[in-house]
Image (cartoon, rainbow, N blue to C red; front, side, top):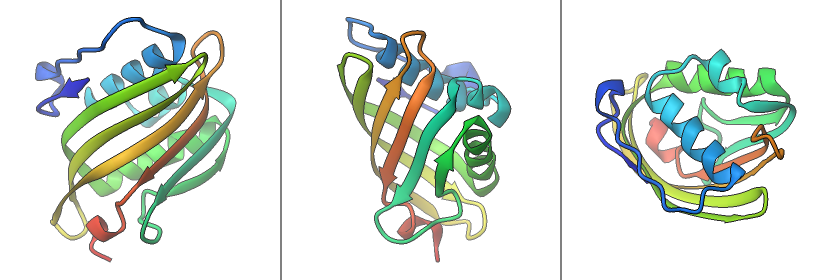
Length: 149
């Protein structure tokens, strides 16, 4: 799946069938994020008890998060919105089995505090309920070097 550029009017998302609940949840979450959905609206896609981890391979950038619950998801997306401007986002692979998937992709952002651009890869381990609410969201990326700290 590819989204270029990161503006709501020009987002084009393409996914390979078959669509499982987890594939749909991934695509819809990132499409909403790219389109500018509020942190609260994004958090509504998460189960009330979601296990959330966003970690960098090199330290703890401001957008890192670890915890559980929908409120934690909203805090993560609010912090992300406050600290970076999304320039480009690509989902490269979604490998789903049942209600769990591993997603790989690339992202390019500008860090607001430094004005520096950064690009890198990420891996997301995600799981959903039968109705598509996200119960596990573990994102690993190399964002600390990008944050300028």
